[in-house]
Image (cartoon, rainbow, N blue to C red; front, side, top):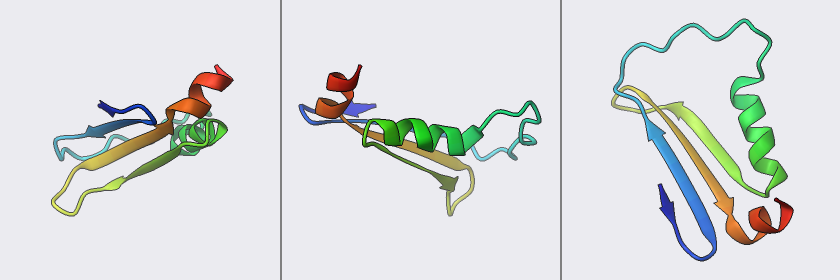
Length: 69
């Protein structure tokens, strides 16, 4: 996690283990996470890493996020 006066960045990296099966409970998964980030003018990137594993990175502009809360 990193933050400054204008942006918050959260990044999660896995260990490279095989990914579990996608949930079948009707959840929106990555699509839902991207939609929630967009509500606050943020961005979500997610995908496999070249060396193996998976990375999810969220960037939120703090001024917009704080004024919408």
